[in-house]
Length: 279
Image 1: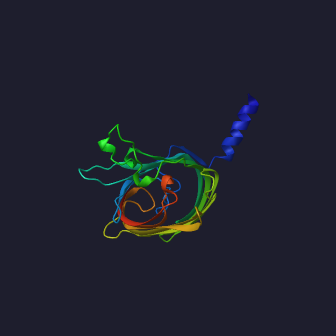
Image 2: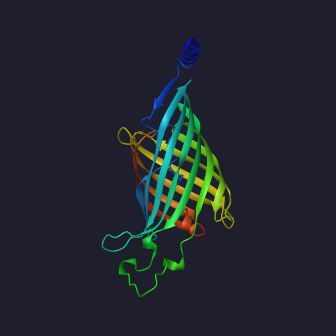
Image 3: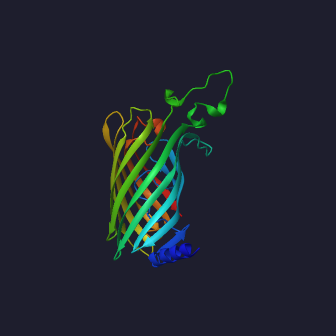
């Protein structure tokens, strides 16, 4: 018993100035605004195509360990990204849906108002066609065969990956770059290496406190049939602390491969208006 007491005293002495927080109220590493695979709760209406994107996702830090102006975190991710169509009578049939879940580790270093850090994720994504991908699904006739929209049948698509992103946030500008390695993927011909980079800039307190104008851009370089860069640009207004939670209304321009796994071989080019509840 004396040995145990001595050990506990030594441990408490070593970590006397450190802090352990369970279920913190905010994220250690904030989402990267223009990166598609981030926690989002909101929707985006595309202007030039008959599509609507609905995002329901959340990241939650489960544990923080703080020491020497650094915060080490562990958390979990659960996202869905749904592709819907707009039809009359306020109907929005769901065409396809992507699921992501996994865990993440973060390390943030605070230096005189600036911060930089790393986020490491281990995640799984699977994608599925839904009933809205069937033509005339509301007028179902058992005597007629079902048909896929645009003759695109459902296919197996899933991937497991690890991802590392480094960021540096200074003077209202966040720069970041990352690398993803896909260690299992179906279909197997898809590339296993993905490169990511982007930035965010905030103009704070535009007309009132916590009203922030922002510009965010992300490029994702990966290989499907050939190497290509997917570009996502967002310009908008965020209400709330620009480094924390809030609500954003934004205009988006996207050019690149369709990020829904069921449509991974198809190119997208659209703009739209969206809202994201980062709560």
